[in-house]
Each structure stands twice: as structure tokens, then as C-alpha cells.
Image 1 (cartoon, rainbow, N blue to C red):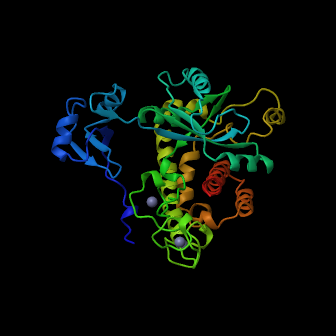
Image 2 (image 1 turned 180 degrees about the vertical axis):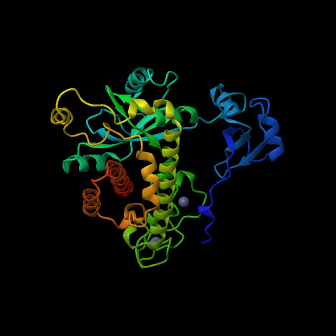
Image 3 (image 1 turned 135 degrees about the vertical axis):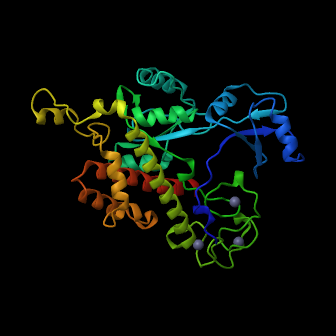
Length: 367
Ligand SMILES: [Zn+2]
Ligand SMILES: [Zn+2]
Ligand SMILES: [Zn+2]
């Protein structure tokens, strides 16, 4: 397969729009149809799903478009700008599943975070890992997991990354997230990276790779629809295609960490508040005793983000280049124990643990 996927996409600002009868229209007609609603729209791109990306000159135009009401014959699709917040207590009452309503919690978080981000608004809050994976985590004695918070604009996403978010009276650090980091497999064609609701391809069997639905399989042979080898399409550890897929996700994740670091480094106005110069009144021991379990949200260094960048370039640092699908959790915790000399590395490794757990959980949720 050609490697065009690893090319970074060109930087454009677009608004996604659902236009009635978009299918039969030419790009010029679509652009003409949307121009009155989105001032400054200069081009369109038709997507497989039938939706249309409308190119706009800048973020300000985009924000205006996103804030307007639905119009005649078109609907502007709300976009999420997610951040991930590691180290959230599993006891936090986020509701799961279809139709889950977390509005009350969102309101509380916004009220508490207003002090540092006056315009804060949140679209959605959810656990990164599925329900089953979280239950397993608790059974294994873990008390924390990662939460995904979706913001309505990029500006707010960046603010949250720079300043954090207040949840149940605690301040948490947030990192840039991208929904493309979530491991997905299609039930219809078995490919990685999308789900059946977004699939326009012919059905391929997860058991034998022939062109029928998996449930119609006569199971005469076993073949992977992705790599052709003798395993089922969902048997990740045996599949080269899956490992390639995981490498692209790891690369994306590393990119987002660097971008997170850049945002925080650029924000010098807050540096003094986060510096290490603080001393607890009283003995150090006592200060630690106040926060027994929390490795995460307290005591962050200002230099942390740039250390992540250094770590990414260090050939001795295997965690970044590691193939996540092959790494067991015992290996993960082992390497974590080895890097306690540096809180930033411990932090990074926590992140990788969460990441691996999310992979495991998405498997369990989907199969
Ligand atoms: Zn598919
Ligand atoms: Zn079959
Ligand atoms: Zn395979």
C-alpha cells in the first residue's frame, strides 16, 4: 500500500455542512448554495458520506458559521475539538451509552473553570475506555482513567490545554486529542480506521475474507481480510496490517504531544504560577501525605513539555517507538518503574498506559 497516509494534511479551515440533495449537484452549485449562509466560503470538497466541507478563510469565519442556526436546505455540523484528561478518578459519575446526559456535570465543570477560562463551554464528556475495560481496571486495583472532553471551538481547546480544567474542585491538565487515535475496525469490510456507519466498501468476511458478511460465513477456511494471512480479521497480535495501523496512530499521538507542548510553552503568562518555586508550609513529608495516591495532577514542572520532545528524539527511549500492540501491561509498568527519575517520563508513560488500555478496551467493546 502506498504511504500517502503519513503525509500531513494541508492546513485549511473548513466547516462541515449537510446540504439537502448535495449528491446530484456540481461543486459550483454547492458553493453557490452555501455562500449566503457562510460568508467568505471559497471552495467545497465532497465527502464520501455525502456531507460537504466548505473552505473558509480563517478560524473567525468558522466560529461564526458554527454559531449560526440551521438554515433552509442545509445543516452546519457541530465540530468537536477534544482534549484528553488522564488521571481522572474512576468514581467520577460520567454516564455512558446512547442518550447519556451529562449536562449537570458539564455545567458544574464550566462554572468552576470559568475563573481561568471565562468563555468555557463543553459539548461532551466521556471516558476514553469502554465500560467493560473500566470495570476490569477497577478489578485490577486501578482507581483512575482518562476522560475525553470535547470543546466547541479550537480556541477553547487551546485554552484548556494551556490552563487546565477544574473538575470536582481539582485542577487537571489536558492534552490535545484527536478522535483518529481511537482504534476502530469496520464490521462490514474489516478494515481498520473506520466503522461500518462510515463504510462505503463491499462487505468482506472477518472469518474467511470472501465477499460476504461475517455472519453468513460457512467457515471453510480462515483468512484475514486485511493481510491475507491465516487468521481472523480481528486477531490483532497476528496481523501485520493492524501493526502498521498502530504505528500510524502512535505517530499521530507523538505529533499531538509535541503540539501540546508547544501550546504550553508559548503560554508564558502562566509560567510563574506553575513553577517549582512553591514550598509547602511545614515539612515536605507532610505535604506529600496530603496527596497520597495522586501521581498525576499535582506538581507539574514548567519544563515538562520540552522534555517530551527530547524524549521523542532519544534513541534510548523505547516507549515512543514501541509497538503498542505487542506490549503487555506488565512490560509497560516495568518500563514505567525504570523511568521514575523523571516525572515527565512517568507522566508520559502513564499516558502510554492509558493509550494501551484504550486499545484493549476498544477491542473488547467491539467484539
Ligand atoms: Zn469498512
Ligand atoms: Zn466467510
Ligand atoms: Zn491480518
